[in-house]
Image (cartoon, rainbow, N blue to C red; front, side):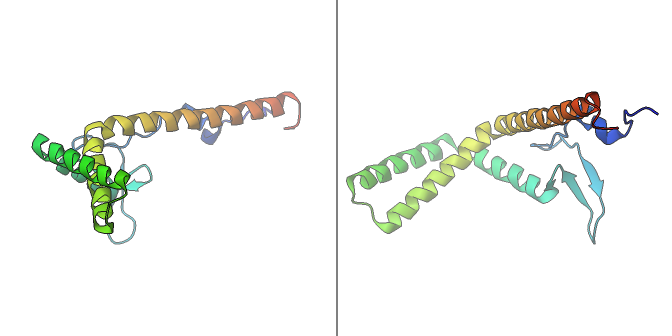
Length: 147
């Protein structure tokens, strides 16, 4: 009898990873109807998480250059106070909010590319794990430990 398995889980590493959409119109994934409401699953994330992320990015992209410049100037002013040791608690909180706002704007500009890069890294890491598992199975078979 042939010891090589033909089960599909032995060759899962051949399949391409699922790509989750980041903008409207890009909709791979599968519909599932679990519980009382149907949801569209994108990898391990629900449609609500994906649409929230897209909505946040769209809102951040709507910020004008003038608003961004105002936030940058305010951040500079608050950082000057922080480094001078003269920042109040309210100003420190405002600094965190301004930083967060600027981060959201930056994410809107570069986030899609970073998400794609993250998916590629995850796919390569999965491939590395699958190849290590495959090699260990080949080695086990070659040494006769799988008989």
